[in-house]
Length: 297
Image (tube, rainbow, N blue to C red; front, side, top):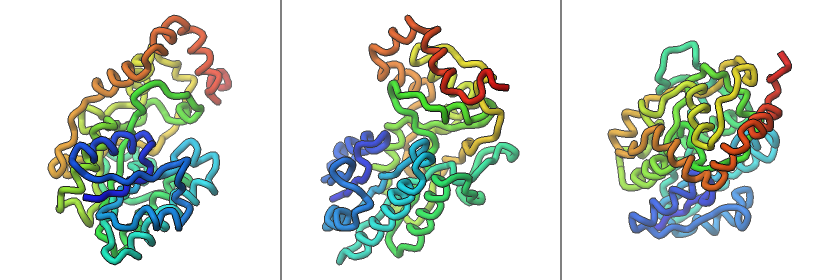
């Protein structure tokens, strides 16, 4: 199958690309800095002649919250460009679009798990973009599928950002290993039953945690100690546990536990992990300086 993969160098896309190639697909990649989904001509040229488009390219938080106008151009206008290019083909390709579990808003007051038919509630520019994109995809008259991904941790060291302190420690959060998310996408292209449907793609029960446990275990994987409660906003966030039983039954992609994710993060951190352990007090102070809340209550 000839496939266009947008966002092929991103966190998820960099795992989807080898997963598609391993299944024998001919993959055309589309990613910054060489290509930009806000350029309709570049998108049209990339879509020409393919059988399916996997549209991962997006501007996500925190960048999407810091530059909402640019994020809208990438997320909404870029998706509209992909849809228009697909529809203009003599034989329109299928379109698999990746959304997020954040589109259901703040749901900690309701018992988990979230289901795909739960209400959609925009809480910031990014979730508003994804909700609008989902509508565009559903109304496109293309053969489409929408995957709402849970959190996909970067499997290695990553630069910290103050947004990490905006999530209340008691919030529920579900992760999915990047390789499992990639497997779900790759398997979907060979699974007729997913088309025309919205599905959650999450790690399942072994990847459902509180944010307190999630963060402590990932920090430990990078050689760092847990951070004090006072560093975090005591507020409800837009993460939750999801019902992924249907997607798992169709796609059989849940191969990794959260232990596996933490182990992969530790391996990916490489030489930075022993260095972080050696300078734990300094690293801790550097992280806490990013918190808008620590020492200010």
